[in-house]
Length: 149
Image (cartoon, rainbow, N blue to C red):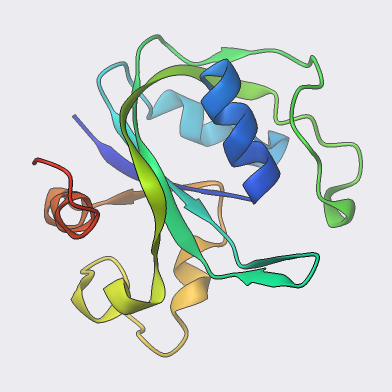
């Protein structure tokens, strides 16, 4: 089993929760050969401002991949302006493992995460759609969120 951190915006994290599908952009097609049923994704949402509220970067939950990745160009995700007409066509069906009641703020985790090797420029580690992380980082995040490991 492989553990992944999947970067998203808040709108697409909600779609993931509703439809139980995760998608990555065309430029990340190579990831689909590495993702397997049984792998687990932690969903990371970037900092965002909604009305007068600033939401910090956070982990919203853990999800298990339940089928082989597939390609589908149906538009179901919200495309950020800088990504043009991207539809995130490389997709995987998932099931919730642990959806956090409250998002777990990410910045306090940084000093303890092994996959974040540059603690000052940490956001560079989360710029791709998905990144493999060590099992100990996965377990640490679940513990901090109050979930059983």
